[in-house]
Length: 604
Image (tube, rainbow, N blue to C red; front, side, top):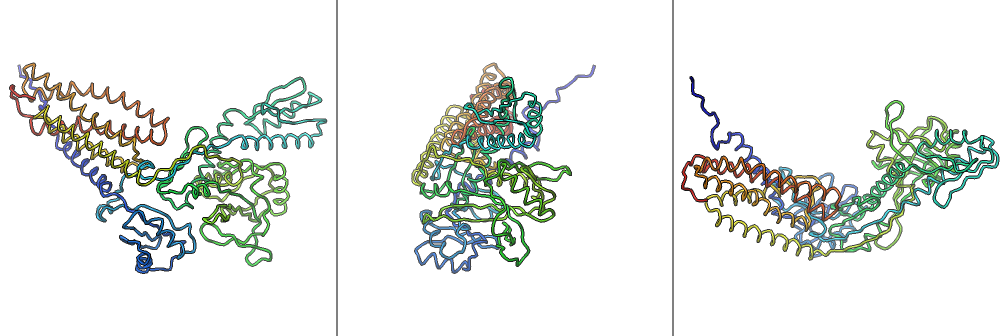
């Protein structure tokens, strides 16, 4: 009989696994390096600022006011002025604002301080949260009742108009104290007609009997949720566009809970200036398009800069818009469906009837306050569409571009018309010195924790301790590299706490493996066999422990916000990198160094 041999090679990794480990470490190292260099304060000047100064002249202007410049990067799209002293950023912006035509093109920015060869690889430093960089945070509450009331008012007007057109006698429609719309009919025979009208024109409304001759209607619960979500999205769109006027490139505007918005403005130390921008208002209008050179025409410009000649008086204002949503038309083309109130529908019907085949322009106006407190208005044409038929209180706008652009237009239309007031329920200011102190204290704690861990592992596990220490250092490099690579990842002060916790999690993986190896050595196995069996027996335990903790991290990230998400992100990524380095990297090092050592008198 032919003797069978075990084909398994003990403690052996294929060459490609070593290549993957080395390449992964190098890529993550390059991604993490820019964070080590940090960032410099900078001023970014956009093309629309129409700056007439050369980089040399800019440097001279700033030096004349004792502002030190590190470098000036200039191209056709923008000019970036990197400052040597971060504290002079606001002073430099105020000085440069007198040399440009459009101050909105002058923004505060941060420029990576890493060498050009490193930045040419496309890597960037880790983004820091408000608690590490300093700035202002607002928590806004979106008031939804006025939005719902617009829908109730439009429904009531529509039902009243239908009753008059159909000759239904003595119909009263009003809103009750519990927000339901009550429709009182003298003759119950007309219930079917009214029900059919509501089902056809208002499918998102729920209708029920109130008494023998009356009906009760209300917006369906799922539709109220949709209206709430669209309203919050509309306010997010408004806030993002307004924040741009502050000149903050790293601003964070995101939803928090069902109807709140959190705004973080890194680098802003004047809450009053931020309030002036956040509290600005917007409006919308529809204009008849005129021929170039027409009498009584005014020029409004598209966002691309092209002029559009329109009538001086708008046909309709955005206050008549109840709703606006993007959809696909009959031919599969993107369109924006607009709902008007009764009076707005009458105006649009009369105008469109007399202008079929002619273009109509939609303008979006933004109002804000400048540093002197004066109101400033900016108006852009966001859409020019051809009227194809007589319009009423519900019509669609085509020619807005692809579906994503149609969705954007719908948000702008809602933003210009829908009444959704916001109130500031929380305000917090963090100084730049406090942010710098948080960074110093946080990373000092991280360094102290790592140093003590490295010392303990080296003394306790001796021969295998250096493997754990190398794996731990590699783990931190890979973790920082991932934080820099992931879009939207922000490092916060609780995130640094997550990094410190990751140090313990990473070492815990090695401790479990090393203890299993010691157990196998005590059973009388050779070192190489103990390594093989130790890793195999520890993997399942490591996976179970990390998987349960990962569930917690995912839940925290899903339902948390701001600092909580920062902690959950670093914790979750730390678990992944700890398993990667603790199982694969440590095994690769041990295989390479001790994988063929079959001694039985080894002390670990």
